[in-house]
Length: 232
Figure 1 (spheres, rainbow, N blue to C red):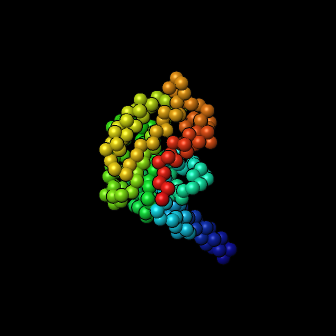
Figure 2: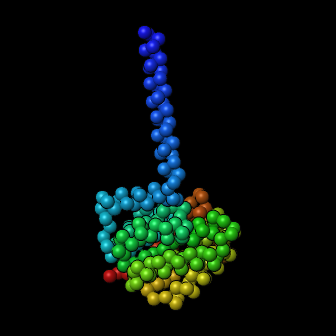
């Protein structure tokens, strides 16, 4: 009887382990099926469910240069801002999640910073590709929100991606030319003031990874962006 009891206990343990393994496989499979940045977007939704940001605010959307600007509101104290940057994102990601991170907020103005990661993702991504992706995003917004102000922050130069600067310059030129022909739109140049006298990225503006900015870098961004912000 004792041996039978021990065998039953062993099988019970094995059954629990098998069930746990199966559950882990299911959870892993579900995670694998989610699109990139899905969990970042869920965090935004969770935050919104606790307190939805006020409508008619200024929405900042894009990649990690916004994500890491965690105290953005303190840099623009006279404005109500919403920061929905998610690190590592490219323009197709912003387009994919527009229904989650743009339209629900009913903003009066949208500030976009994205395109940097597009160029870094693959050598096959050209400046024209980045410009066309932004135009697709712009038109998506314009179709749903005809009168909203849309401003694009130029792709920034960074020491870690200095080799991409020719493409960055070209993409910025193409996007600026497109926006010049649009109403309720603007191009915000942060590229030029982030260069030194030799035309290279200013090392002192960046943290150790030489990609993301420190407070001195964000001061340049504040000074470049603030004149474009809508007060009323």
